[in-house]
Image (spheres, rainbow, N blue to C red):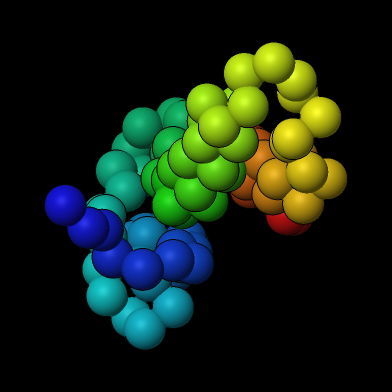
Length: 89
């Protein structure tokens, strides 16, 4: 299974989350009070997936130590979380 390639961004004017190539991924119900938070979480989905995938694989490959988790993985995970929370990655 594959998903639309990232990055995904939220467009407040159209209330949609789309890929950088303009492929619509989701429409956002702006009547919902949490619509901006929902849009940020949806837009961050590919980043969150990749960060979790990388971290999980690093731990599985070397269960004896967490030193295998590279700074870039932690940075990617932190950036994905900031994006999901509506803050700049």
